Structure formats: structure tokens, C-alpha cells
Amino acid sequence: LSEVSLLIVLREISFRDLRKLVPLIQGARKDFFVDPLVLTVEDLRTSTDVFPLRLLQIRRAYSLLAGNDFINTLFVNPEHTRLACEREVKSTVLHLRQLYLTRAGLRPAWQEALVESVQLMIRIIRFALELTGLETPLRTEGLLEQAEKAIGIQQSIMLRVLLLRLSGERLEHEQLEELYEGYLESVE
Image 1 (spheres, rainbow, N blue to C red):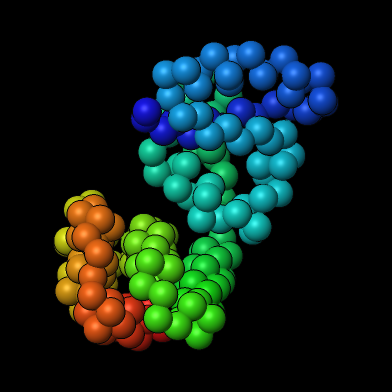
Image 2 (tube, one colour; image 1 turned 90 degrees about the vertical axis):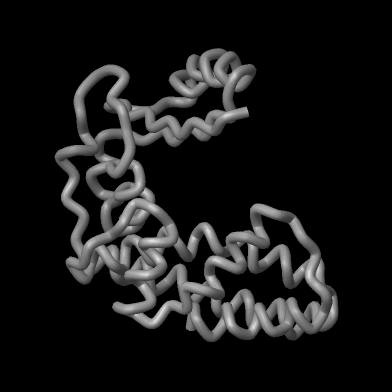
């Protein structure tokens, strides 16, 4: 199934409104994995500091299906974006450190943590490069190459984790520990 993110913006949201949306969302879920986000106009306007990355990601690739275009008019303060990037990276680093200590020797948990975090890291890298004003290539390889030059992300390690995510290969303990160490250092 394909994933479709759906932003629904209403003037007000009552439980009755949510109840009315259920059959529409459930019906769509037969053909797609629908990820609905329901906000009021006021929620949207006052959430740019709390969810800047999510809103910027929506802005990057959205189609207006009906109604007013609220996304295009949102202002997201670059400082809020920077703080959100920093928070996400630090949370990931803390999680990876904790997992390494608590799941010592459990390769599946280590590998799963790496492959789950890499997509988030790539999104954060894209936002970080945008904040610097540097070119942000669309292709992942170009993005990581630019990030290696600009902010010291190790392109080879990030690509290795991405490949691991796509292939599902299970690495031997020593290989995985080496990759885990390099990834953690790069993210830090």
C-alpha cells in the first residue's frame, strides 16, 4: 500500500466532526495507508514553532485538494527549525547510546535502531543544509555529499546504513558494531 499524508484544516474541530471523517478515512485506507493530521486554522497558525519540521515537510510536497491554501502562507522561523533539528539529532544520539548500553550484543536491536533512524537523519540533514543557504540536492547521494562537505556527515556511513535498510542484510557482530560506532560519531 502507498502512504498518503493528509492534512485536514477546519475552522473548529468537534468530536462530531471527527466522527464524520471516520468513514472517509477508513474508506481511503482500503487503497492507501492514510496518515491524517487534523488541525484547526488556529492550530496550524500557532504550531510553526512546535512542529516546524513537519510543517516544512508538508510544504515541500503538497497538493491542495479543496479549500484555502493555508500551508503556503505559513511563516516558519528558521530558529525554530534549527532548534527542532538539534532536538531530533540529540534525541537520536541519546537513544542510540542508551540502546547500545542496554542491548549490548543484541545485533537485531542495534541494526533496527540504525535503519529506523537513517530516514529521519536524512530529513534533518536536508533541513540543516537549507538553513545554511547551501544547495540541497534532491537525490540522497548528492545531499549526503553536500552534507559531508558542509557539516561533516560521513556520506559513506550514511549510505551504508541506507543500503542496509533497503537490503535487509544481517551484519555480523563486528561489522555491525563498527557501523554503529561510525554512524553514532557522524550523527553526533
